[in-house]
Length: 527
Image (cartoon, rainbow, N blue to C red; front, side):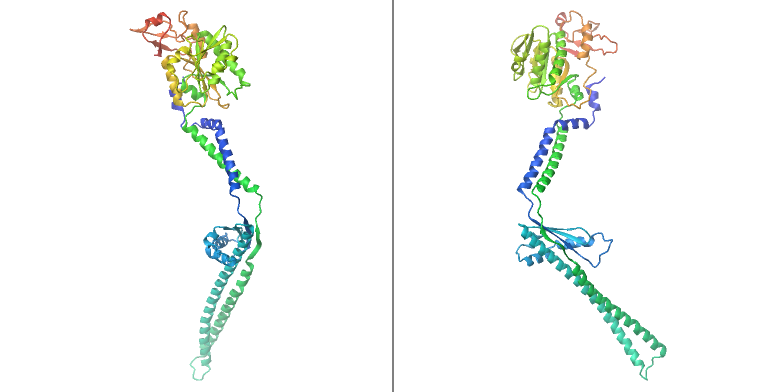
């Protein structure tokens, strides 16, 4: 059998189904957050429009260009372009007194390919942006050419230095060859032949270094000339709707994510049961029916459903003679349900309105003939008493509304701790809960709201226990069937089931013989 303790022990640490249902029920929250983000993004686009921007593209050639380059060279150019040296050179071309540190923050460079560089400059007007982009591009090209020329000159100077060293050695060899022509020379033919070979090698090397130095100087102008502006600076003119739509979309996304996250956190932090299974477990009674939430005071298709529930409960009232309808978060629904129950009763019906705002009295015009609505202060035996178990309830007054009760609970209205309080207070008062009518449940809730260990109070077991009740048992639902003595001052009372597989409950009443004489027990407790 299912018990509250076993259900609590088997509950997961985080019930995803409950979280999803809670998020779906709080759709107003995350939809409002999404709309707020949308409006904030649109307002940001209107209040902070995109500044005037100019764009240009440069073709940058390098001496070390290679097909397998991963973009390292163009990244170096981007880093150099975003230095205060280039910014200061561009400002000098413009004749501006703006600090280079501030100007650097107004433009960005992006390497599109290994040799194409895109430059975007923002300013107070499109004309100023175009002028700054042109000056910045010219300053970078000039600096790039100077750096390449400096590198080429350094390389040529190194080659010429090596050539001069070889030329000095060559001059020494020529001097030795010239000295061999003297009659007093001691250089033999073999050594003279070696000197001629050495002179030829040195002469070739001098010629090679001279050619390499010349090529280094010749190659630099070609690379410098190839580095140029391939797309002249032009203003970027875009529709005002583009930033508006972009910012609004970003704000919508952020607002939606924030709203969903907040709804998920609230579903975990605020322990308000939504599922039929959880509400039945916390209240210790089964969910016998569910009703939709009324919209603007109109029920629409829910009136027929409410009528069927009222007819079922009216038959229960006919068996016991007195019943209470206690609401938790849905006073108007409870009032309408009680009036529908009264219309289904045979004969005159009395409905006691004990709700804080007198919703039953306000709807008394719809009660119909044979239904009388009285105030909660009237000392009259009620057939249907309508009250509340919301925070602030006077628990001791609930006994006079009915010996049994039907709870009309709105899903997600009360916390689990308060549901436990309601169940405990009703148990202390000896008011059994026939069942729970759940209002505004989630349409995708497929959990089982039936508890199988409360057959003596559930509607499905009332017929069996009514047949087993003696004729003089009175109206109390826990009326005893005499059994064997269990001890001094105690009497074991067994509710005999009709079927053998139904559970058997034993109740030990308080020792009150006068109560047994009248067929009523002041307070039954389960033994």
